[in-house]
Structure formats: structure tokens, C-alpha cells
Length: 399
Image 1 (cartoon, rainbow, N blue to C red):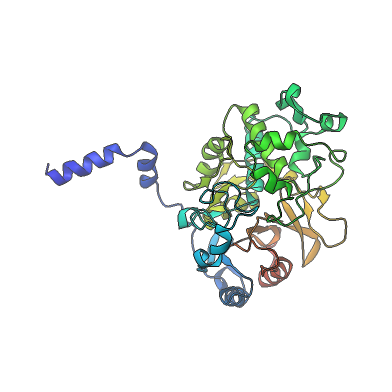
Image 2 (image 1 turned 90 degrees about the vertical axis):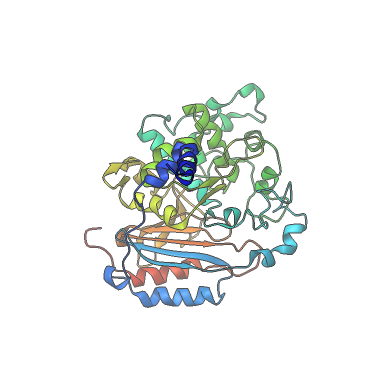
């Protein structure tokens, strides 16, 4: 054996087993097609592409369209985030709390919107939806308790502040539907230091910060957007299963879906950031939405129960109590289908413009990534975009 071959053999032998397995794995890429071949009006997608490309909607980074299990449209949009947010990255504010070079400086292009300037894009609060999916997988596998279990069962109540009968009645179901009842205000811009989510992210232990808050209302009675409620689920998952939620996802969700690249931030105490810390490549994020279109089955393998899929996308509470606004399921945003308001588009929603969505009657998955994070700027008009997409894609018979 030559010296060069010996060196190559030593290098291969020194690689971690997971790295070698990933290199040996057959391609998991989506099969590709064209919009016309799968019945999509490509002119609508082209017009969106043109508008995004010229900056009509601010900083949009990606648009991916999958119909019938085939990738038919994929566009990247280059943005100079080093320049766009340079001043904000260096000026102390609620969106760069802590170390100015760290992972919770939302203006630092080493961390946002992509991980180390690569192709793994921050999902922000779409992480909440993925967290719900992981819990559904664990319930399907018998590893997680009923979502009607009281939240305080997973805490040492001698160390929890502001316990009253309402907090005692709070269940996992309420955390999953953003109706826990905590005194929490996340309706302010995230750059506002009075926003509870910004205060939480500036603290060392996000779980303690949240569980110790006083209650404002009876659990389950009203939707109130609260990132802290989802962070509680990271602690609860570990207590219930004995496993870190990221490791569980790697084994039982990401692995079966063929997702082998991701990054998931951890909070200062070391717990996984389930409220907004996951990064995925857009085509991999689409796999999770396609899994739900398949009623929890991926390539013939049952990953999550059909019952959990059904519960997840069943409207529980209106986001705002007025006609035409979205509803909320088990961490899923449910927008009324513009073509038929008795049906819903299943969506995630993340700070900056993260919008994965599934159109069940159209066998369609669309993912948008963006990074519009300052108040008052341009952003993708979600409702009008939904209207254009449903007009561009016919319903599938029998769906």
C-alpha cells in the first residue's frame, strides 16, 4: 500500500461512525419535476419569485415548493446581512442580549439567519411546531404521558412561586395550545425590553423564569402567545422520558425522515431551546410538513399516529377573537383556506418570516424563509400569498 493510501485509510478510520454512515447513505433528495408536470401554474410562482427578488417583501431568503412529493420550485435570494444589520448588531438592545457575538444576538450573521453562514436556516418559532411533532412521536411510541397530565407534576412544587388553583389546573394540553394562563405579554416588538420573551432570553434559566410567573387567567380559556410555555416542554420532555428532546428527535423523527443535518441552540442553563432554537435546511423542513400530509407515514413507515396529526391540525382556539383570523391547534397555525373557508392551511410561523405550510387538499407544501426582524419594515404578505397559491394549484380528487 502506498503512503497516500495508508494516509487515506487512517483518515477514514478516524472519522466518527455517524459521519461515515452519512457519507455511505443513499441520497435522500426530493425527486424533482416541473410546476406544469404536476399541475401547478408556474406563472404564479414566477411572479412571486420576481417580487421577492426585487425586494418587494424585504429580506426573503428562500422559497421551496413541493407538490405530490416532488420538488418543483426552489429559489434562493442572497442578502447582505453583514451590511443590513451591522449597526444593530453592535448596539445593545433586546434582540442582542448577552454576549454580542453569541447565538442570541439576532443581528449577528454568524448565527442569523443561517448557522455559520451556511444553508441551515433559523426556524425561530417554527421550532415550537416541530417540538409538538416530537411530542406526538413520543406519544405514538408510548414514551410520553397524556397531554391531560398536570404541568406541576414535572416540577418540585416547593420551589415554584405563585402557585394557585389555576396553576395547579394547568395541563400539558394548555402549553401545547398557548393557553397556559400565565401573566405573559409577547405582543410587543421583540426589540422592546418589556416583551416577556426578550426578558426570558436575557435570563439564565428560562424554565424557572416562566414557571414562577403569576397566573393571569384560567388555563385553556384564551390563546395568549407565550414562548415560555414551549420552553417548559423541553424540561417536561426530559423529566417524562429521561432523554434530551434533541436526541429523541434525532433517533425517532429526523433519522426516519432522512434529515441528518441540523443545529439546535441551547439556553444558558444547557436545556434545548424548544421555543425558537432549531435550524434546518428548507427542503428538510418540508419533510415534516409532508409527513403530516401523509397522515404521519413517511415512505411506508409510521412515525407519528394519525390521531396525533388530526389533533394537531384541529382548531382549538382563535388567535384573535374576530372573523378571518387564524386558529391554533397543538402548536400549529391554522389559516382558513381562501378558496374554501371550511378548510385550513397547516402552517408554522417564525420570527423574521419563517412560513412552512401544507395545503392538504392540494398535496402541496411550500416553505418560505426570511429575516425581516425590525418593526415597521417590509415582509411577505401571508394572506395574499395564500390566495395566490390556492389559485395556482387545483385540489386533488378525493382529498
